[in-house]
Image (cartoon, rainbow, N blue to C red):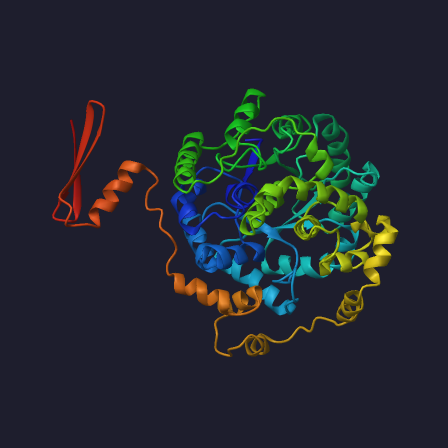
Length: 504
């Protein structure tokens, strides 16, 4: 085997296509088959952002989701986005002791073996990672560091060489080129990948891209020619579109090129069939091959952000104004000095763009994160030194800027776990309850989650088997007959506990 696959279906595939709305029961239906398919890693939704989604929108306990994935996927190493020790990065900072507790809990549950750390800025590597990476390594994680790709006047070969050198200095287990916007072309990869491989030295280099411009499958094929051994792919219907290339198409192409791939194609196809049935059942989007879209090079919004923008705009009745929001994103990014459109900057830009469109006045309301951006909080490499000076002066003159400056001078106090329990409302609560309270900033949404009851069951994705399962629940139903043309099938309920089918 010389080509390996990191599966992104549960995490980036669902984030890019389903706005992270992949439920406990959906994953439960296919997790065991995925574990036996032969993936090098399976990416799981084990980030505080996903925990918020489970609690707030799906009313499911994220720790129960994690335990289910660990139980059904014991063989395959599992990977997730990580990097910080703040459980609420876009809100009130949490004590680092909670971040350590969170990462250790996921490792001990067995749902996480590898931490994917996105190095978006040189300042992040200089200021944050020297304290975070030793903690993650001490817990036992493998470390994969991402160098994020972007297109702008300041994203040059020299910049990528510098970022790769700095990433390599931390001695991670791997480095991956993260093309979150699907912006790579075959020609650009030919130029850039050898530079990254040279600076990475003996550290393996992986490739992660999205199909937003239609180029990613071609880029993956070229990456194999350049010696890249690990590609990030998804299983249809959670592949293609704004997500990663389909694993089925990728490995077919790899084998035609003379490579060996030790994956069980039939098992992966069975997972795909089940996921298609789930998508149809819940009317979820299905990834499709994308035509070439030059607009992606202009706005550079990652697929996961667009997916969530659509969801958020629909929640406030503004779905019809998505194109306006995207146009506003383009202007904001230029005014900010071309930040890489990836977490957290893509969320900042998207949120501010939606506010500008909804209010009808640009920057009538400015989010705290962009005021902090103008203050240089996110470092020089965020782009703030290239920022529109008039806009920067205007934001820094706001009363809120003075308040944020004062808050920024306060150090995050790392208190004990017992003190954290007192702070979040109950000295006797469990570690998991404590972490969820810290993530959500309170108890109201947790109470709503508990009140909803157990997660929705997807006991079967095959219509006939689902009908049989449902028939078992109703002892008063004697039989059901289904007819299509000259074919008919009769389902007979026997003693309310078993069902037999007679085909005519």
